[in-house]
Every structure is written in structure tokens, then in C-alpha cells.
Image (cartoon, rainbow, N blue to C red; front, side, top):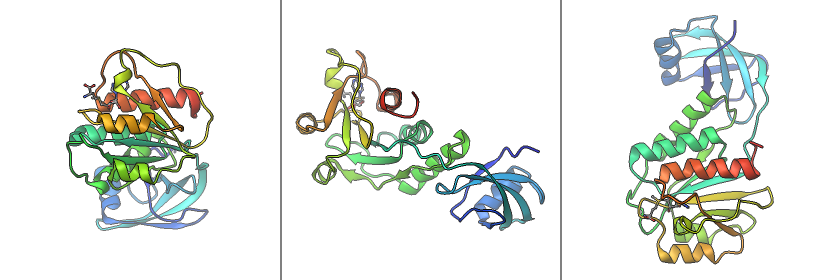
Length: 240
Ligand code: SAM
């Protein structure tokens, strides 16, 4: 019987490995998805690929699964970070979910001058990234970093990591197609109020940053994140 349910677990996986479930996972598997002993589930932990496992114990407060066979090797995404200024909660959730589905390796919430949401709930965003990986068949879950101030991120930037700076000021002028060498990259997306002139100058002044237009219309930050990831993945990532 083909296992359909995929579950992310923070536990080693391997042949005959017993994997305990926490209360939340037990509630989801046995309460919501009505699975019982003997059912088969696909497990992944972001490091050891995907394993088919069988439910050995099922209870309200927990359970145990036994790994049987590796069904998919670990597939790492390209070394791409999505650095974005959080916007309203639901739309920030959307950005994190799409970044996980579309192959970001790390997600960095940025506090820029015009960012209007002062704080994020990192654990909640991380749970969205996990859920997106469970749904899209990914075997890797991007880490959602703590919110960091733009200036600090810039001061600590490793110049080996190139930046795709999505600059709304280029909307009218456009920009050449994205090219460059593969390797560590980051996409920068500003908040609803855009990047400040100072931030824009900082990014434009970096040798390892490429300023990119996302077309002639001004996109919402969540739309821009998806558009930018599509452009990057097609040009330099694992979609081509
Ligand atoms: N307040 C800004 C304005 O009116 O120009 C709009 C900011 S936009 C809502 C949020 C972010 O999405 C921008 O900072 C930029 O990173 C990205 N973005 C949106 N449209 C873009 C475009 N046409 N070209 C490049 N980046 C774009």
C-alpha cells in the first residue's frame, strides 16, 4: 500500500530505526488522519532522505513508528537565501511557505527602515516551512532565521554570497536577464514601503550584488518573492 502521509520528525532515521511521536504528531496521525497500527507513513528529518515507516504503537499522547526502507535520498536545495522584510502576518506566512516549496535553503526576515512589522513569531514561521516541505515532497526544511536588522546583516555579509537585489526603482527601466555563476546567492525583497534610498544605495554599491527588475509593475512583496525565486531558480537554480 503506498504511504501518502509525509511527516517531518526531528529524530535519526535508518533501517529498523524506532521513531517516537510527540503528542502533536500523534494527534495529527491518529486523531486527524485516522491512521492505526500497521499504517505506513513517509518520514523525513532534513538530513537523511525520506523513509517509509510502519506505525507500531498508536496512542492519544504519542506513538512509535519503525523505519523500513529509504524511499528518497536527501535532496538539498541550491544554496539560496531569501532575505525579505516581513509584511502582514498572513502574507509573511505565504512568503515562508512559498520559499520552502520553491527551494530556498534559508529564510532571513529583515528589519529594514520601512519594515512595518516590528517582530515575527519565528517558531510559527518555521512550522509553516515544515508543513510546506511535508506537502511538496521535499526532504529538506529551510531554517527560518531570527529577524535581523538590515545594517547588521550587511555589515556581516560574506561577499562570496552574491545578492539578487530586487529593486523596485528599476520597474520602469527593466534590467538584463539574470546571469552569473552558480553557488551561494541571496534574494533581497523589501517591505511594502520599499527599500529606503540609503538601503538601495548600499545594495547598489556592492560588487557582489546584481540589481534586478521584476517587470514594469510594482509587485506586492509576497508576489515579488515568488517572482524572484522563479527567476533565480530558472536561471541559476535547480529548475533548469
Ligand atoms: N513602496 C514601493 C514602491 O512603491 O515603489 C514598493 C515596494 S514593493 C511592494 C516590495 C518589494 O518588492 C520591493 O522593495 C522590491 O524588493 C520588490 N519589487 C516589487 N516590484 C518590483 C519590481 N517591479 N522590480 C523589482 N523589485 C520589485
